[in-house]
Image (cartoon, rainbow, N blue to C red; front, side, top):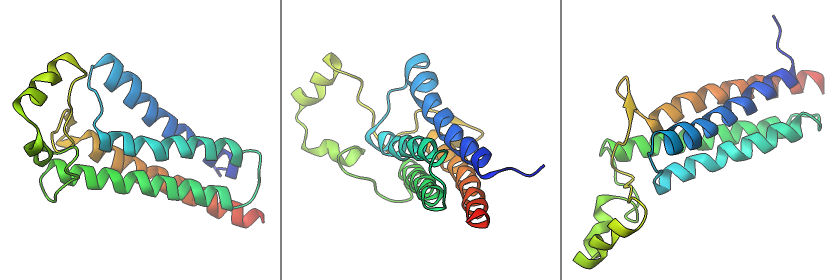
Length: 159
């Protein structure tokens, strides 16, 4: 079965929509796992990929599938970076890791109880089969990257 350019774009954009929807509705709303700052960073390229896919269904050519590929590459890279921060392979931003707490006073730390739950980027909040959410995002986003690459190839054959 040969997949067309538009079916590949639908698959890639739908994959980003599924990952973004899963993050918001399953993990955040149903499971009560609020995102950290780096989690949000990984969501933005998925949102961009959805918009790119919708436009690419109307506008022909390879430019938009290339942008979709870059969006998938960006969120996959951010997922790898975030997973590495969680595993303490490298330092993350001090604004959302344990190192960022050194400038807070005791009253600042106690005030957290009255507001939203504080989520640190270097803490694993959920994992399955030994991989955390950012690691799963990276794995799945690399898969979406391959689908976008096939859409680029199909676009170039058509042009």
